[in-house]
Image (tube, rainbow, N blue to C red; front, top):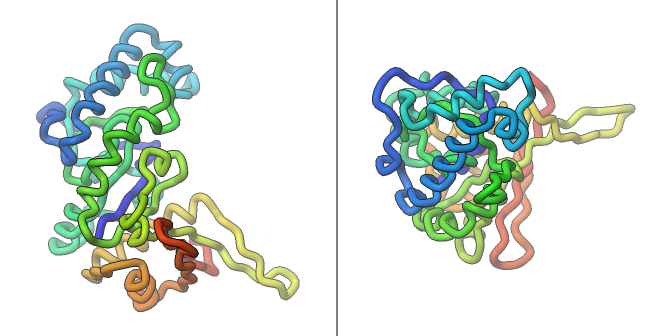
Length: 266
């Protein structure tokens, strides 16, 4: 099982240890594309802070993020699982998993990134700011920049197993499963169900959507679930207590669409 995750805007500080080594990151087929983004991002942030803020879409209050990017090559690196700290990762809570579940996480979780393309949670990276929606002056839109190298690297990473796609739309633009891989891919939407005047109303709630996705991944890792495909994933999630509605693709080359329905928002 390969689980595709979005990153988080919020990130822990860089570490105090060894600096980034691009060649040590997983998915070596992305190294050249990573180097290109890293070079332009560092140069942009070092040359013109105001332009960098504009390109990165940062407010005045986030000016310090530009300086962080200037030091990407020398800042201490930490595991990606420690760097990402948003709502999804708080719910996933990698640090508290047992040893076996941590090994499963290392094998199966892949975090998409505007800067790195995609990394394993065990890959060591510095803290940074560069979303997939950024359009760099030289390289252009990052979603488009990543498509060609991802087209080879991601099917290789997926192997012959299930792909559980929990990415947001911006990160999904960097790689869309096609063909046979798409047929064993499942996307997940979280819906909040509530009764209004005796009628069920369903809505997508952004914060809880992320939190529930983190809980889903944690549940699968903790249980040692190993679904072979989308249909088996539906059964595994139901066994874990989730209310799941599944829609198989109407034709080949399309992913399954899963709705996880919740009635309480925590």
